[in-house]
Length: 160
Image (spheres, rainbow, N blue to C red):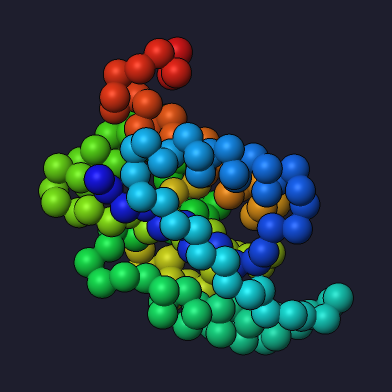
């Protein structure tokens, strides 16, 4: 069974997001061993300077890097990443498994994104849309797409 880890900067606070995450965690348990790692978001003032943002992203990148397992296939969620259809994501997941990469790691940054060094370390940069979404909502959207990918690869009717 493939292992999927989602490393997120920031903790879910809203109950409706947590409920949605719980639902997809339950659904995904049939397809993969899922782990969600929440890392603290660096606190910044209300109007941070670019230097403060850069320092926070660098600190968060160190925390993210420390949680990425050796040999994992890393996918960074970022707006400048490539947009893929659900079918393309399903293929990416299946091809990764076929290459013997038994561990997929998805990275979700905090409010200010991710440090460029973490994005550069990723094998794939993936974007859901050119639109901006709250990173907590992105977590739910990503879980749904991972679930959809497994459903597509299993040939079920979930994906119409």
